[in-house]
Image (cartoon, rainbow, N blue to C red; front, side):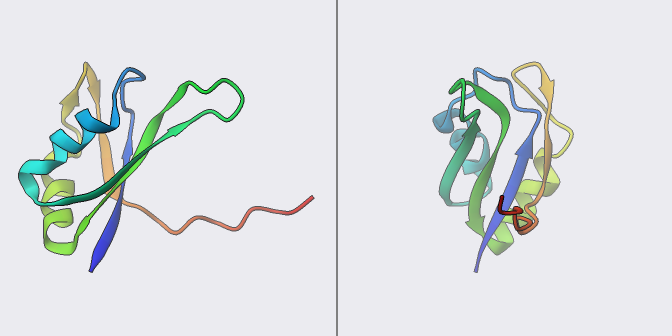
Length: 87
């Protein structure tokens, strides 16, 4: 089963390809989605990686609190998105 992994504190210059390469040694990366600011289009410094379950657990354990591009990553299982209030 695929798991979604939250990756926080990414350098703003990080690309989806670099993040995929970071996670690839732990197993097949199904998708990488870096989040951009809607108004400016600039990176927000976090994203999500989707991997199969045993590989995802190994990647989270190995990469949390490691240095990437001069920043200490926060890597953990993504929590389901809270519903947004409608206005």
